[in-house]
Image (tube, rainbow, N blue to C red):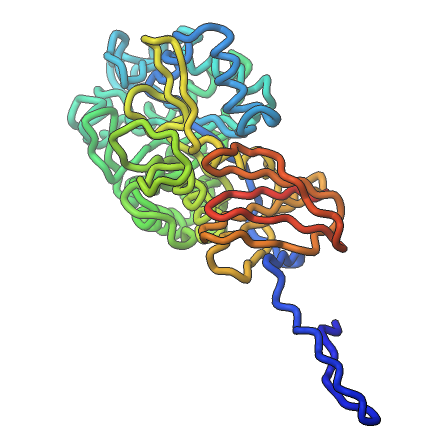
Length: 447
């Protein structure tokens, strides 16, 4: 492409001043280079958080559900992570009720499952999510029931007793069958959550080798779902679990998705597998409820946008599942649900996630993308319908103009005063121009 003119002198005429060479475009997208397929973006409402939602008025409930799942009013989330309970009935808040709270008489005794059709209000929200078009339901167990473990308690770590492995596998599959009875198909099933962390709430330890061994028990039984493993406490730590499964041909056969959290360590690269990977749980540390976009707290909206970008580009994840959709008090959830005052509050964390989740749909493919300014963190995607989505997080203090957009384009900005607010795309120049405001997330959709 001709970028300028050479300064020459002809017949004594003064030289023509050259056109300054055009710099590189602000954003470059290479559609020929494709990366991971996207499964979606989601939330969890485990540990009875849906009971907080149920305490609000019907109108408020609908508004919250719209904020989570609606593609016009909210984030358009496409994954709901469910918590498989392990505690007996009557357990306090922050525990999930088990479908087999009592020992049936030993690992070989006929199971005595119980089902209330409610599952701590998770069935209700799952059905609502399904009405919005959600098709991905990820059920995950924090622990086996206490009687299956060497510490006799669903809390405080402990390990699964070898003689209970098959009974535990059947227990997990029974849970998915109960949901099927309610009209919800569990698509993804996890048997462990943070197996490298002992918590005072429901928790259970597995080494990477023990996890790989249990997969070989669960896999042949859970044939109608995709098995996930292993929701490690940190992304670096998750690599050991992935490596152990990849090293075992039989375990590798059954695990379809490798999962990790980012509490102990952030996403710094892909997990060691060719299978799909999910960032399946995280929210930032903090001790106050914060609705801000950019205040340097480490749990503002800008922080979340950066974390999602890193997971997609550095980790090459196919899904990003936030913890939690809504909770109470000094929470870093997307929403604060106040069951006493009967009201809710929305944080910019929701809109940071929505800048990705509303527009990047399941089945999209991430494209190679780069920015001339290192302050601009950019990712690009092509949806199944052919639309292209470019998400640009401008972490700098100056606006950046991206020229040369092709086709019809719409842009949406999230910052301190805007939440996915439509902004104009200037079509007065060839190809169109959109301005990326400083310290803001801009989502551009092109058709």
